[in-house]
Length: 327
Image 1: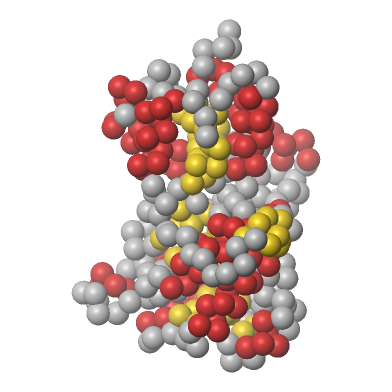
Image 2 (image 1 turned 180 degrees about the horizontal axis):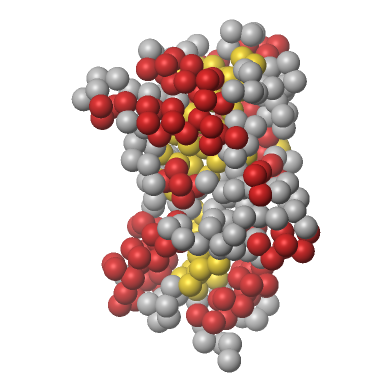
């Protein structure tokens, strides 16, 4: 095993897949000469050249359309957005072309493409740079949605995404690019659609993904001090969702709390809560509860940022509520 940063894990995944398959290429804003807005693509222009590491104009709809066309004609593009907030401009190509092409062509024209970049809040960036988009993209049939929380999963799942024959949405976070973690020395892949039990427990299940895993695991540590054993599940893939892992955990713990950086209406936690009450109702000893971002745009002031995002104390209190330990 070796320890590397999150950005390095992403870079290794892309480098390995580009060496393996000359149809894979990277394009996006500042990925080449500047070596990536967050230095994810550092050194890749030197290795692969300007025909495979391509700087684009600040025109998300335009360069996404070029990439989608390339994918439909046999190439395997990786499209990097400086933030998923900017990819709103490219939604027509992602939703109306990439996700639908296989169905519209009767299975004759595929679109093997990865759309990746940082997602959600990174602190004081204001309302237009702080939205989390997993639930929106997970509502689009034809897309696979991955949202990772650590270097090991980032590398293994990005490699699987690049090899996948369907369009894949790959969510990262600015605040995790410097996080370090251990990965194997050799090649490995992680299957799309398989959640991970990040911490085993017996009293309550906490489900989360992306950087909110830090909140979930932090809450589990605090709860352990009070002899409450929390099982923590990292979804990793949002669509397709690994219902089996969630169900089996709830059957064991009989309680479920979901932590996500999404607006509450029509969120991922909404879908999980519906499915669990439908298929595992008899196992529940308390209502499914969740903690989400507030139902409002993100603001800039530090106190409002803190109020907006889920945190460890509120998650701990919510767990105590489902344990009936709060008056």
